[in-house]
Image (cartoon, rainbow, N blue to C red; front, side, top):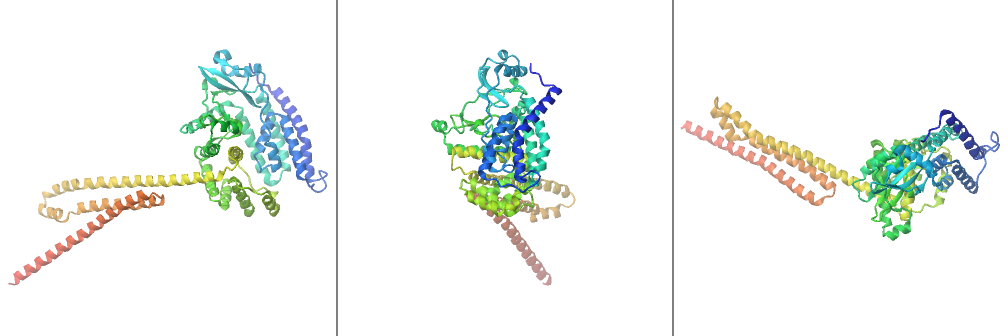
Length: 567
């Protein structure tokens, strides 16, 4: 049986971790404070060269690694946040690996049996040697009803350790904010909130199972994407049992080449899958490092580990679509406008600086070489704005930026010349074409409904008119029949109404088809529209000629009668 620690034990654990974390990070904190004031309270700022920053970054990485799972995860998060740390630190922290030896089987067994019951009864077979070990959990293989499954078991005691570390970070956060620059405080608070939320979700396997099944349902129509199905009967808060899907790691270039996989096409397909999850579905796998992505022999992409996922509102997705469209058009000004709208950029930020940064980012994403001298020149030119970082990433947007950063590295491993922006351009173009087609179809449906309704009305008019004439016939048969026989007003009106509606619909539909570039359909619909306009014109012309003939006949008849009267 797995026992949760009591209040006293938890408080002691928090105090112990606070001391351990404080002693480990105190030298690094004092060094940063001395960079601002040489003697902490007095003196000017110190100049620090690149080699010194590199040594400090290496020491920080080693310290976080020693502090355990929570701080390894924190370092991994910070490695994707250039709005918080300089590039030297983000590059070093990216080397943090979340791989540790698995816990002893007996300890893991206690966690497993607390969720699903005795192992021998719950599974047909169970391999007690873990196939992977991480700081939060470990994965085993087993057989269930004849099928091979993967069983993810949470590391024993990890929830208490994580909660203690999060409380330590909450206590330290006000001190960090006090010494941070005003422009970074908003970002640091967001990072802290994001980290606490995602880490708590990651250790709750029920959240992971729900996210896995949601994404699996969303991509079910794509045979080239595989998300393992979960087994609800053998899953819980601390255990997640899934279908076992084998594959080569996506960064194992040699294995992919031996399988005959087109790596260039694979990189493009991976980028497209993420664009779809983020912009269309709104629920996405948020940890695309190579250990969580594999490729089957048929070339299908396999997604593992849904402990870290993201969700976006429809409003946020619309904003990101606008940003992607601006990036596809190389419009840095429009990109900056969208950043302001999303709350990711201070409206008072130096626009020249921001647009230069975004333009360089687009060049980099296109696979073009961005010379470091360009960046240094940009920094020198806008040195006065750098202490007040203008980018302030909201939590959901920061997750998207993190994905983009990690995903770019994966795609560049597959294809060194990978052009992210070209994939975005193709997506934007297809979206525009789909939008035009949908508008054409919607207009055609609306117009078709109007034409159908008008035609039905036209067919109902003559019978109604006939019944009305029959009722009136008893009172004034001669006058009424003269009007119906001679003028046929209702029939002409109905014919003109149908022709007018059809011609109007044709003009609108022809315009949309021409805009969409559908030449053949434009010619066919345009020809039909001209025919309708011709018939409509003819109906007015023929009725005018008929009136003229009648009026001439009436004049001639009156003239003849007058001459006869004079004789």
